[in-house]
Image (cartoon, one colour):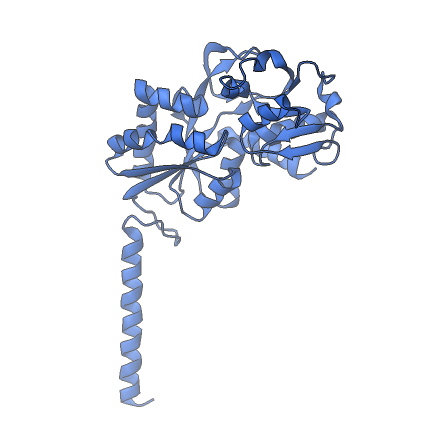
Length: 312
């Protein structure tokens, strides 16, 4: 190689080196880089799963933007995912910073993609079978099957061959726990019933009321969500069975987010849940009454249930 060619070669290498350094600097400046480095958010994107009609839920969630911006002093954008899987994919592809994830979606994002760290769990009031609240805050809840009051379905065993309204397969209350309950009765949730996958527990309740489904798997008690549209929903439906307890929903953040910012976001949501205005908002969104610190081991029971369902 001639000296002239050598000089050109070294110059080209130096340009590549400088470009690489510039790229590294850019990714550290509030960008969700995929090279394993931590990042500091210069704005925050928060996404919810569509436990009810997505447009309705987004309208309820939007006021959180101002409260979180006041807490964190950065811009915040709140949105609702198109389905349960898309919020997991958004975390995995680093399109969002924070996800409100049901337990199974959290485990999927954490275990399969290494894309989520749980920081908080929601708290709710317990619910009686008539839809009224208890006065006890709990960190777990039940899923339940409902059917029309005049139906001949009175137990899980009676669900064989029936059309059941489910949620996405990553929905803890809308699929995983109910599917396990069916399996306990020797009923295959894929072949021994007619699955009807819907978006939103309100849609599942409505499907039972209008005869589209014989039964529905819903969180306890999702009938309250449709009470304004169907005032007689508790008289027109009955509870067939409850599942085992499910850990409450999570707030999870990007794994590679700066640790100091994880703590800031954790405290921001705790403060929001403790304020009168904030609690009213999160209660309207997901019936949350506030948030408590959480850890990954709380969801080992979720992993056990997921393995059961995957083995069917």
